[in-house]
Image (cartoon, rainbow over all chains, first blue to last red; front, side, top):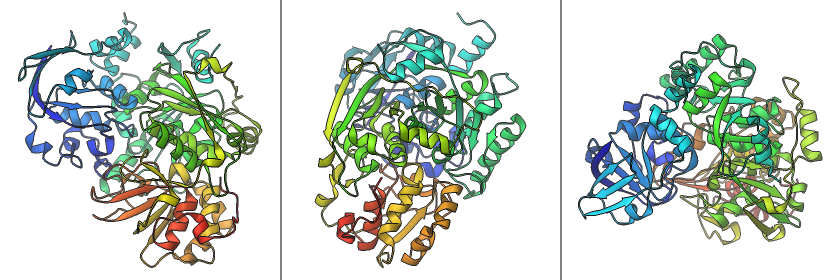
Length: 167
Length: 429
């Protein structure tokens, strides 16, 4: 599966409070949450982003609370994947569980600027910056996690397990 | 040879041993969610085609974040977990008989040593103070565990933090954990388990240990564990297991099992403040400079326990909250509220000119009950000071323990307790 989109670039420690401020957590509908995604760090994000765009950041993306509303808001904003140096652990599992692709690739992060166009081949973990003509390979997922990703998220993965069909 | 975390995970995964980096399916002793994360968990649970939770005694729902309901949508979310709990027979604590989840669960005897506890709240790591492997997850993870009783985990490596010597007066658990986070950074323990050891840790009362374990997540950790000692045992005797569980305590075999050992001189730690907008942006209060403030919040799952209120009250007794400051005190549970009433602490707060609120997470995450306007500054005993955490993205939160918070309420600027009181009326914890 190949994703293509424009880069929205951020620095380190992008926390869940700026991804989706808690003052909007009195609902859990992803489309309603998406209306406020990144609001406190990038008020123009909502108007600027387009379907398929990518969020690129440095270290510890998604730190802070366990709110699954954060990856849900990003996914419902049309963001196709997040590329970072590293991710905070709860955000990482939440994103995998709900089917928001994450890639760890510091070289790809360092070599791109906001507005660049990236192409991502998820199955190969390949990130191509078509604006600059460079290609990088992200850190591969452990086999266990690929099982969840291939099932389409943890709910489907568990349903198969409960039905006794887990490979 | 293994660490406490590895031993607990292995015991709950039906394996002889596990190593850092291994994946394991782990049986859960308690699975928890709240009024913000619970509704999403219930939605995902309902997709699984399972009728009942795996064990209603082990599934706990606590309305605490926007409770008592701050608006119609919050009331709808609270209703969702209330109705699910009734239908499933889950453990549920209604407003007026509840409190903030991480103050409530230990107090109610729902968590103990050697257990695996997962919660759809990042501060679930609080129960590491009792020697439980406790960690926060998202709503979908919790939904799966509600149905199956187990969840996948990646086994963390363990970092040992040793505090040698004796703490100074007024220095407590919050100062210790802020000191650590200031030292290693907010991803300094990413994917790791933290273990806390040393004379100063052994001397620390349980409330201070809860504060430290609570903020392990602020260093990126999966959990933060304390050894089980006579203070833990005394706490467990006073708060016996609700379900008559017999707990098992574990010890790490040797220092060689740790990925890293970091030692500190406990006596060198001073009352500490984390400046905006990261918990790692710490300064000694003596080096904070002249920072005027508009609000003080004393409470939360981090510092809303009885000894936190005792420390704050000792500084506010016979003193007044500064004319430019609103001081909001939020006992962490109905029991803490009631005990503080019996001890006269609430009267002390009210006489000083503070507001005393019913237990709620409220302002900590910018929900309600103390939201900040643009340009306002708050000294808060809560756990995060990210942009917009307590309200306007143009407001500022300074994290501190109850002693610094109470002293600052009196002076109207960030202040250490020694500035307000020449004597240490009660032991800081």
